[in-house]
Image (cartoon, rainbow, N blue to C red):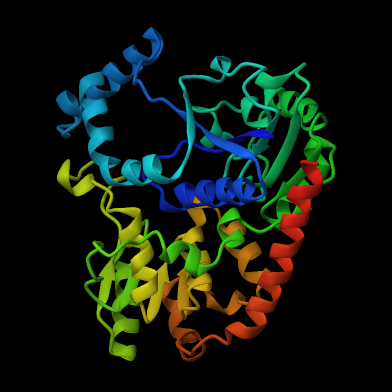
Length: 377
């Protein structure tokens, strides 16, 4: 069967890239021909959008004194190419893609089935730019005789973010799916309440593979990690830095950071280049302890059996962390502040008994593979 995976665009987000990689290779191992549908970014905008960007850039530069870019497609292309130079190389090597500017470029003859997932593909504000809110529920396939499946699709939050018109449209499309699974327990309730459909809860695609599968991607030419306490913090702050330093002192470890300032508009072009995916994976392999505020860094800490502390990232969606950790009985690894960490320091710095965690993981993998096989039969 020829299958198209629909997720958020592949850029600099390690978790987004690796969840697409894992789902693609899991389906490929089942005997399918699989492609990830990805955005062919052209940085071409409507006249209205160009005017908005020009006005905002002018105000920031001329009136507010900020180092803002006044609308320049050439600059945006250069910036994107620089930020993704390493991550795009990984994607090109390991992920088969069908590149489109918009979903109308996909024809009825292109695929026999579509799998939506995972990542926060059903979070309205993330899906609006690409593939579009309705298209994240396969609106572009309306009237086609194809299989439609959602695997561990995530709303990212336990709050409903769609407006009234969007809700009506996506609910109609959701009822056309052959099977729906979501990543968070809260997503099951959202599907029932707002879409009128039943959904199952499934593990993130990255958990379908094991640590050895990812270690094989690293390669002998990947430089050694510059420390033994991996820090992958998306939204750094003085409070989070204090927490990192406290753990490093308590454990006698050397912290190292595995991400650039890729999302920081104030950073230089060089500072915004995201390090290679292989370097990120090697960080988990080399680490004796992990500190993060990232959902997928939690997952890779679990896959590599590392003790970790996760700082709840409210702006990016707390329910993701809570749902994941509850599945494996690791809720105690989640803190919401430095003060929270200090109050629970002793327990947080203890090793993790991964034997019961892995028994649960094997059960969840079995359920997930059965779901995929039966849904695509």
